[in-house]
Length: 116
Image 1: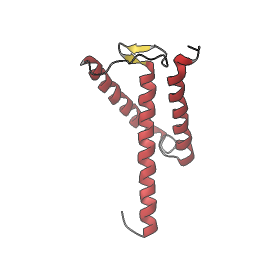
Image 2: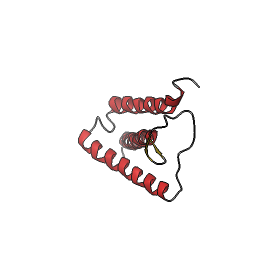
Image 3: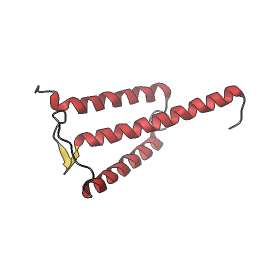
Image 4: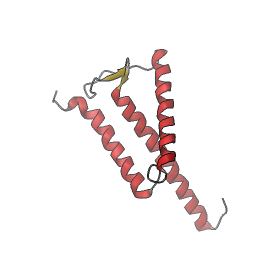
């Protein structure tokens, strides 16, 4: 095992989040469109998923998988630190896809001369 292997998953998550940042910045989809609203929506989504995880862990449905690609740092029993990064990425991805899809559909409708 190399010294960097335990950080592989976290590095992939951070790389993916950088991709969301670039898409967001380039097309002003979420954070770069309205930072105040994005902070509220992103925080609410992250909190909802963390509560969901807490219930899943409490009921024994969710558990931390063993792999050498994770840091081993846990925020709570069965809640690895990577989970927060993953959920942050998931919420950001969802909002970028939602906003981008909505814009594409509106653009398509406008080109056809239709009304919303």
